[in-house]
Amino acid sequence: MVEIPSFDMPFAARLSPHVDRVRQRTKAWVRDMGMLNGVPWTEAFYDAADYGGFGPLTHPTASLEDLQHLNDWHTWGWYVSDAFGNGFVRPRNVAGGKAYTARLKSMLTGAPVLPANPAETGLADLLSRSTLDDEDREHLTEFMDALVWELHNTAQGRVPDPVDLVEMRRHTIATNLSAKLARKSVHAELPAELLRNSTMRALVDSFGDVPALRHEIVGFDRFYASGGSTTSAVLAVRQFFDCELQQAVNIVADLIAARLRQISSIFGELPALAVEFDLDDEAKAGLHRYVEALKSWLAGELLWTQGSGRYSFSPTPTRRSFHAPSGLGTAAVFVH
Image (cartoon, rainbow, N blue to C red; front, side, top):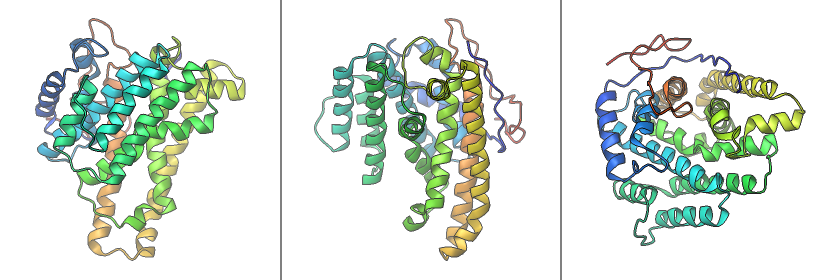
């Protein structure tokens, strides 16, 4: 077993006052979509993982209505990732995995698809009450293509190059969509040309790398050590540097810390960027809200990961309460 390093977080986590209602609403939705049928989620596993508590920590200032909708999207993404890993990556079923994602992608285009599994049922429901633009569809397609990429690597017994892995992991955790949801949750309307700027793109990339790489450390024993997947940053670093497993874990942890430093550095550059793009007062305020939303998302995601049983589930789990957080970056959590 790998030793999980401590993860510092320079930003403060906050908890939505709507957490209890969102948890109840999300579980009811998950049950209605058929996601608690035992594969890959049992009710006990779902409760231990606390997917219903993810959104209240990552979008702490969102309204109840917005938060319920956001959390459904996040929970659907978690379900698809778990179902795909259990149903296709672990058994190396490439044909099945490609067919599974092809049907989901066809639903994004508006093709008539009669839902045949909980992932399709959930997506159909979300699409019926969401307004997606072409960019949203592109991000969701990238997410599903990245799942197939991981499946291909695992089926071939291939450990990807570390650089390739980091880039693709941004897609498997839907980095671009998560950043956009964070921005929308605080109603930060920003010019498209600003969002396309290289500095803003670097911010989003680093934002996605932090949780993506951390999940590969905390989930290593559960998902990778057992041979469930070869697409692991820890395995990639160990192979690339020809080092011991724990040393590889520490290198990945150092990379996470470096990404957080880069994020803080980019935040410091944004006032000058606002001047460069001649943002008016409203846009500057939106940029500030976006920055605060990203900080809250990163701190909240870490707190969720530390309390979730997704990576350490046992038949009789004891989920840690988010009402008594501790550790660096959690001092500003407000309780409900």
